[in-house]
Length: 279
Image (tube, rainbow, N blue to C red):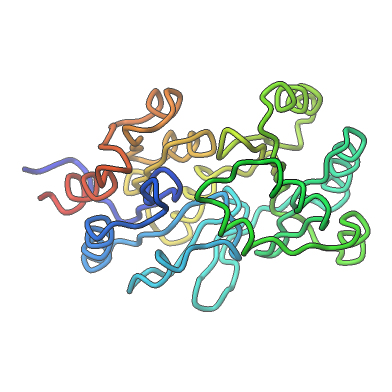
C-alpha cells in the first residue's frame, strides 16, 4: 500500500513514546528504528532532556547521529558533541527568572551546554518530596549540585537552554504560569504533569525540528514526529506527519495527523512500519 509520504527525518519523544512504562525501548521499536535508518532516514530523539540525560539505549542504536535536546534549545551531533543548532535564553533573562522563583521559595534546575545544574538542598528536596517513578535514575544521573545556583550562573556567564522546576502541585504551576505569562521573551511547557519547563520564547521542538530539517535540505513535508505530552504539541503540529501515541494527552491527539498505538503496544514501531517502511 502506498502513502503520500516521503519521510526523510523522524523525531521521537522519549518518555511515553519511544520508552514503554518501564523506561525500555522494546525489541520491536528498536528494530523499526534500525530499519528506517538503514533506509537512509534520519531518526533522532526529540526530548526535553539535556545532552547529559540522553539514554544510552537510544544513542547506541547504529546509525543514530543527532539528538534534539532541551525542547529544541539545542540539537547536537552525538558523536562530536557539537551543537549543530542552538536557540538559548540570554543569561540576564534566565537570572531574572531564577530570582522570581527564589522569591517564591523555589530553586530550579538550569540547563547549560548540555548539563544540568541545581543547588544541593533543592536536589535533595525533590528526591524526598516528588515521586519521579521511572525517571529517578535519569534525574540522579543528570543533575550536578552547586552551592549557589545564581552565583554559579553569573560566574559561568553562559546563556541557558532551559529552566526546569519540579512542582507537582497544579495550583502552584498555574500561579507561576500566570505570573510569567506577561513576558513575551519566554515560553512555558510541561513534559510531565509534575514539572514546568521555561525556555526562550522561540524554543519548541517543532520550530527546532523544521529549522534543522531545512539545514539538511529536508522539507517540512518530509518530517515525521511522534509524541505524547505538552512539550510535543508544536512538534506534532509542525511536522509534515504529526503522530500522537494512543496514551497521549487529548491536546496532543487533537493536533495530530494520526494516532498510533500506545507506548505499551510498540506504537512507534507501528507508525514507522506504516508510514516509512510501508509494511
